Each structure stands twice: as structure tokens, then as C-alpha cells.
Length: 352
Image (cartoon, rainbow, N blue to C red):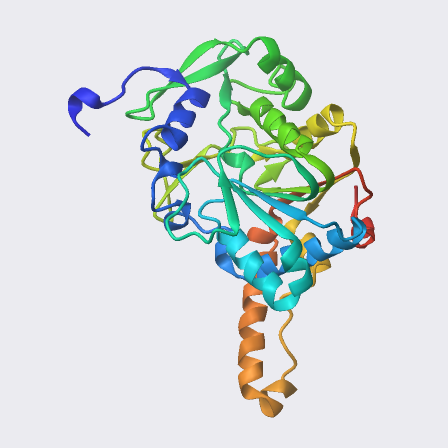
């Protein structure tokens, strides 16, 4: 970047992140897509899409097999999940596949050669019946960051987009202060100088709006998450480029992410949307196991009777193990809310 074009103006992290990720030439709107820089469950294995199809079949039954069943993928990347989901559905549930409407919601331009049966938009459209799925979307909804100063006052952090250098700004006030008081207290009895919090109010509003787009169905948010009582004292802001963690600099060169206060998001949706019937939080490990993925090794006897089948089963077990690993992808939070219907009965075994 030319020296005269370097942005050295100080601004809040929310504004800086919005520009870096979604502005002209931003990280998420480039043709290469996020898969070139980090690996999500969708990229790890097609078993993930297969598990989503299992959930979709359960939902379809609970909805009474509607004429159209809409799947809305929030922050769809380059539609990797929808492409895999469509392929699984055509192979395993052709009758359901004929009723599926697959929608990608993404701020990037529509990828070239994307099949016409995947709808593409930068905004959420209403769905009479369906599944709204948000895999690692909320962590990229930009938020302000607060830090406690030496007098115990939570202040907004300001950042230089060109360098990532930070300085303390004005005290947190208004709706942001109210959110902190309720969901991530930084008062003298809770925090020390230097403690930080990501102010999740924009994520609460984004999730409530997304869930409101469903007439009847289920909404699922899958993300790095934490809940009240176990917030990280120094926040979780991180950045990634080409598969490696790097220093967070909001210059458009890297992903900028922070973990989600998922309990606050679910509560905001529950409050804003009277149609929400059930709301629960579980882990990806438990959710995928409920959907048939365990990571268990195939029986050794299969190696003798069907060597090729054993190798395939072993590979699938390895992929399932990665998706359900407690210290990795399996530790992701799954926030699940049903709208207009009870949750499918299979999910009642999970803790609320």
C-alpha cells in the first residue's frame, strides 16, 4: 500500500473491523474466500454437511413436510456448506431435495460458476419454513472492545487500522454500558485494570433479526462461545492469515474474530421474537453425536472381510473425531432455537 494511502486515523474496533472485513477490498469480499485462510467444520469434512442433512430431515418431519423447505446459510463463505448439503440431499433424500430452497447470505459477490439452484444475497429473506444455519458467522460481526483503565473505568478501545496500535478512548456509555453491566461486568468488584470485554450488542441484534426471518423452523448458531460466569478476562480478539494466527491489525489483510457471548444472543432473540418456543445451548460434540457422528473406530473384523470398506470407515471415523474433539471443533457452542414449533424430539435429551 502506498504511504499516502495508509489509514492512520484512530477509530473504534467496530468501525475498523467493519471496514477491514467488509469494506472495499476487505478480507471477506475478496474472490479467494475465507477457506484460503482458516478451516471451519465445513471445510474439515463433508460429514458435517451430512449431519446438517440429518437435522434437516428431522426438522422436515416436525414441520409436516412443507412444499418448500428453506435453508438459509448465514455468512456462507463461498457456499461450501450448501453445495455439500445439496449433494447429500440428492443422493440420500431425493424427495426432500426437490423441495429444498438453498439460500446463501454473504456480503461477497456471487462466486463464478456457482450453480443456479443456490440463491445468493447480501441480506436475509423471510422463510415460511426452514432451517437457518450460522456456522462461524457471529464471531465476525464487528463489535466494540472495552478495557478497564487504571482508575477502574471501562473505556472503549481505539485502534490505528494501519498498525493495530491501540489507545483508550471515552468511557463506555449508553446501550453498550448497559450490555456490559448485564452480560460482561467490568466494574471494580468484577475486573481489574487491563481487563477487556467484547461488547456483543451488535451480535445480539444480528441474531435476533436472523431468527425473526423464520416463520417456522429451527435456527442454529455454531461458534467459538462463552457464557456468563466464565468470560475470558482479557477478551478473545484474534486474527488469522493463511492458516496462521497473526497480530490483529484491521488493515484488510487478515480475518478478525472474537468469541461470542452466545447466551446473550439467545436471550436477545428469545426476548425479541415471541415465536421462539425452545432455546438451548450445547456443544458441537454433543450435537453431532446426536446426529450420528461419534468418531468411533470401525470393528477390526471389517479389515478382514472388507479391507476397502474398513479403510473408508477408518477415514470417516478420523474426520468425525476431528469434528467432535472436545478441545477443538467439538468444543464449539451450538445455540439452537425453534420458532413456531417444538424442537424435534431427538433434541429433548440435551440440556436447556
